[in-house]
Length: 186
Image 1 (tube, helix red, strand yellow):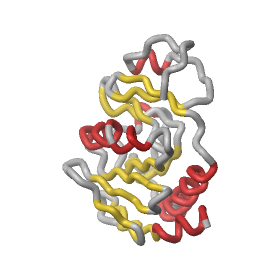
Image 2: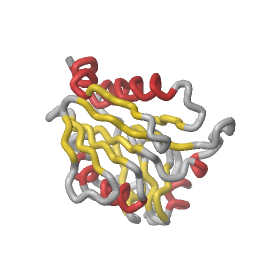
Image 3: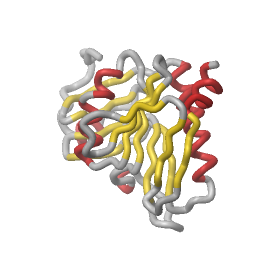
């Protein structure tokens, strides 16, 4: 997305965090300031369904949290991202008070939009992989598939029926992909 003229030059996380809140999503991708408008309703419907799946599955877990953006996730000295949905590990019994405590997500999920698809599949994917995000899921609304990436992958695993995320303790959290799309998009 073209940068509006009213934003000052932003090349550091500190400069990004100092911007006034304008209701848009601001990210710093390897030093590049990227602004994304609000997503379309179908994007949000699918994201809501995925959040519901993980929210229910993780409800009784005190060691894992699922979040939705906006959230300031720092993945390097020049990279602050806002994954659509992400899961983190935390100390049981201790609440997460600030985004700086989040660390590297165990799972990051991006739902593609026409304006973000090339960035989500390219630059952001490389940032997530380089940072060691356990799994990165790219949800393609048009193809109704999930692309699953791990840190060392050169190509994604493409799934259209079922996907399963495995927590650090080896607990498994399955998700019926076709059901997510059917429930949210018809």
